Image 1 (tube, helix red, strand yellow):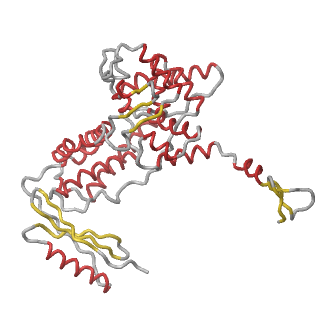
Image 2 (cartoon, helix red, strand yellow; image 1 turned 90 degrees about the horizontal axis):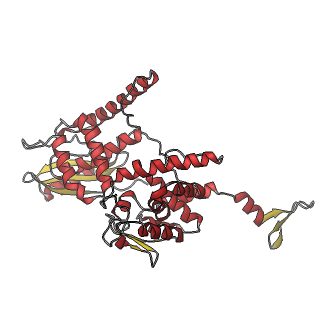
Image 3 (tube, one colour; image 1 turned 120 degrees about the vertical axis):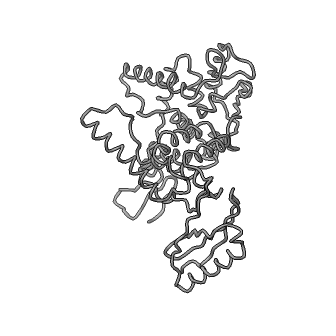
Length: 409
């Protein structure tokens, strides 16, 4: 049975006054967003009357898509470049440092060079497709030049990265719609490229141990990523007042979300590493950074990768090669070490809910994905099934022998 025709009036207050739009469902078309206009020409009563007319048309089967009239852009409207810059400054304090860096990367390196000169209200499906085409052409030129070994340009974006840029633009346009600078609907919705989901990596227990051993003077930092699951921004913001070595607890205070603010149980080995690190540190006051620079200042996130993780990976691979062991998996990042923490918790017998609480996740998707893949790697269901149910092959195929009992088939 088709879903009944339902809908609602949407009111938004923007810099140019209150605007009115309709949302309703049409069989075969899904949810429809129809922009009506602004006060004083429109009010809620008029909008509700139009909604009733549209729903009646849907029920009678005579509804036709309405061609939305683009809301005129006021002379004070802003370009994509100007409005995006304003949006960035408004929103940057609502999210974490890593998200801010991602927004800056998407806007400065990719979106604004292509779309920055357009008025924000002019961005429609055509401009979105133009942006995608520009990025795909960049990739084609790069691949052609790579075949001839003549390229020194940065590697172009994969489909997934192009989609990430469009998601940032979608957030910008959402605000433009709210402020009355774009007539809607958001042209980024439903126009993403098809992209394969990257397969996340993490280390096995022996590989994790090898990386910690190879970290030298940064053992405690790498161990905190692997054995406490700290994000890089949490790592560089960590202060000694948040580390209770007596109780074996570490408190994350710097997260932007409620789930991210959490208390982590320190394993005995991590507790020992942090105790030694504190004893050897010149900066061990309550308000000092746990992993401070030589001058006692906060360490930059990028330095964790460049100055600590990459050299540790190189040293670990060299040590493993000398004893005939394979190198660490390719593509290991700081976030790989965080996923390693979840994997080790599962291997130690933790349940997904506990893993979520220790990692600071409000969503279970990543924890369950790691759990599923961990179980897949260690799967021995055939042996376990044989241990529970074993056929009796003594000539009587109608009888199955179960562990601990015996029943007739």
